[in-house]
Amino acid sequence: MTYILALNAFILLAIMLILWRVSVTIRDVSFIDAFWPFGMVILAWTSWLQLGAPQQPHALAVLALTTIWGLRLAIHLYTRWRAHGVDPRYTKILGHVMEKKWWSFSTAALVQVWLMQAVLLFIVCMPAQLGAFSDAPAMGVVGWLGVVIALTGIAFETVGDAQLKAFRNDPASKCKVLDTGLWRYTRH
Image (tube, rainbow, N blue to C red):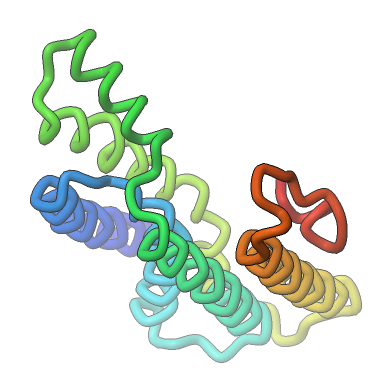
C-alpha cells in the first residue's frame, strides 16, 4: 500500500509541476480549480490500476463514483474558467504573497497554489485512493444506500450548476444573487 501511495504522490507532483509551468506561461493559476476534481479521478484510477483492477463491488463503486463526480465537476469548472478567465481571488492571493515576500509570480504560483494544492489534494483524496483496497465480496444495504446518496448528490450538483449558468446568462439577473432552485442548496 505504501508503494502505491508513494507512486500516486509522485504522479500527482509531476502533473502539478507541468500545470505550474503552464500557469506561469499564461500567468493564470485559476484552472487549478478544474484540475482538483480531475486529480481525484487520476489518483483513484492509479490506485485501482496498480492493484490489478480489482473487481470487488466496494472498489468499483468508489472508482465509479469518484470518476463520475470528478469528471462532471472538472468539465464544469474548466468550461467556466475558459468562459470567464482569471479568477480575481487568485490574483489577489498571489499579489499579496508577491508583495509581502518579494516573490516572483512563478515562485508564488508554485508554493502558494500548486504545491500546497498537491498536498491537500493527496490528503483529501485518500478515501478514493484507499477505496480500491476493499476485499469485501459484496456490498450490503449501507453500501448501496451510499451509492444512491452519492448519485443523488451528483444529480443535485449538476442541476444546480445548470440553474446558475442559466441565471447568469439571463440579462435580467445582472447584479443579483441566485438563491432559488437546487443552486440554493448546492452552492456551498
